[in-house]
Length: 112
Length: 110
Image 1: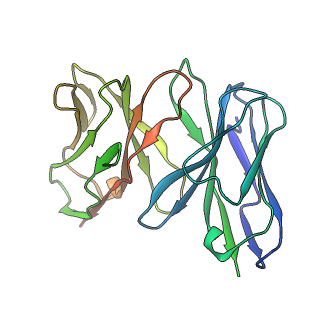
Image 2: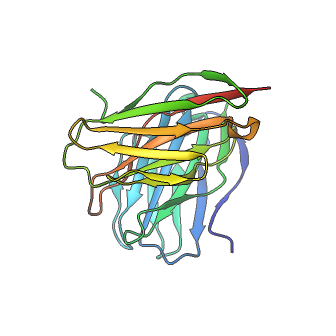
Image 3: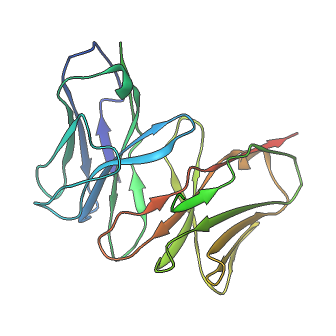
């Protein structure tokens, strides 16, 4: 029972490099989310996808793009990484009927 | 004003103590409420839902006061393993994302 799986777990990037964080869920959930978490800031929503084929901006979308590839997968792309994007990134999914949101284990990203 | 506000703590309590966390929310149309727990360097996980009538799960009791737009979590007989950050979470309904408070950090000391 994998739940929400995100990769990579750790990544170091140089300023200006690009990368994609991958996320997949096996719970047949409609909604998927990308959050970042910084010390003292709590979880901040970057982008979300309420259902397959739709994506919406969250609180802090600048510098990021997303793709809802299918119902299972939701990727987050940093086109030109900046040191301010050093953070822990969490992918999550949610079944609206159940309300509960399930998180992946997190991706630790450092931009130098 | 933030939509969900919590005292960040830290709350440092001895083992066996009773500790209570509070959370306020600003959107009176909010429909459902939860407490999540997050251990250091781990993902948040659901601790319990919060119902208007109040609900209990072992040593944990959650209360909701809709009139005051206030949620609480009471932990009795604190254990070292209760040390974590507790996140207050509000569902505004429909397809809207859940709203997370910044969390309250608890350290239970031997």
